[in-house]
Amino acid sequence: MLKSKTLLIIGFVWPEPKSSAAGSRMIQLIDLFQANDYEITFACTAQNLEFSEDISVLGVTAKTIELNSSSFDDFVKELNPTIVLFDRFMVEEQFGWRVSESCPNTLKMLDTEDLHCLRQARQLAVKENREFTYEDLFSDVAKREIASILRCDLSLMVSEFEIELLQKQFNVSKDLLFYLPIFAERLNEISSIAERNDFIFIGNFLHEPNWDCVKYLSEIIWPLLNKKLPDAKMLIYGAYPSQKVLELHKPKQNFYIKGRADDALEVIKNAKVVLAPIRFGAGIKGKLLEAMQCGTPSITSSIGAEAMAGDFEWNGFVKDNPNEFVDAAVQLYEDENLWKQAQENGFEILDKRYRKSLFEKYFIVEINSLSDNLKQHRNKNFIGLILQHHLVSSTKYMSKWIEEKNKK
Image (tube, rainbow, N blue to C red; front, side, top):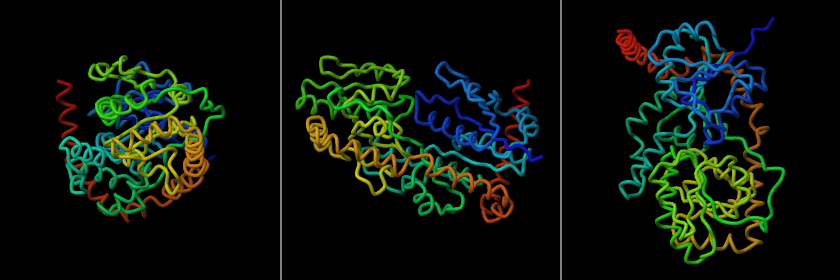
């Protein structure tokens, strides 16, 4: 009898697909592995919150685990998974060495979500009111993140730009990286332009680029746009709005903070245009993919559109200058032919770049090949073996010290 294939996902948080693109991404990965006959356990140290997905309904075993506890060693050794998937590099730092010690023949995979070092470097440049340079990348976060990528057998990347950056700036081997974007297809039912109203932004406010974007909309973009389209409304949706977000609610200026959307796709498909002047970030933007799914044109920045459209025309406009951004918003809002063409552009991007069927087969072939040739693959990545050795030496005993301290 063939040994069953098992996947252990160690999550940074419990997935919230209705709150963030990261949550949707995790559910898609679960679905992909289940479709290929993997039994899945999802383990997490975080509290299971009100809006977390009930993954047991999906046929996934949920397991609460502890940091700095040898109980995890016993758990993972007994499970002996075929693959361990770390949800972001911080999780690999915490549990990677334990997996390596307890299950040395398990394939270790990292889902990066986006490159944290790139996002934080761009954020620093915005805070300091200057242009981002590649010198900003070489931070302590980058050292940790790249080390984690090198320790893993394969890292899943959602952005081709970030794959190229890792290879050129950090000399990461292409053999350690696999392009697997968020999957998306157009909705079956699309509202016509006559049924739509308003501009919209949507994004989880625990994600710093979203807060910055809404602040920029409120202070720079909307005052200009409101003068040109005084009857239009700007609707801001997003989970976990803080007090500083709520204070931007200004009905007299037609700028509305709406809070969490029960159904993100429903509110996007009823809007006329998505506005997302994103000033820093990384990865691909779930809100812009959802706009394409709903047939809703969007206007964003070059960072917002980065790596998303490939060689295809954007489903709207990409503008970094605020005045050009506002002029583009007026055009899309008022010109029905332009709006419909932008919508078709979005559908083409989805069909050619984000359908699950474009990637699934190649991904499964890749992980099967790695599993069959794991020792040779690791020997080619000798720097990764060195980093693994030193992480165990430095982190293992610190973790054991913390565990003993907690007992007392």
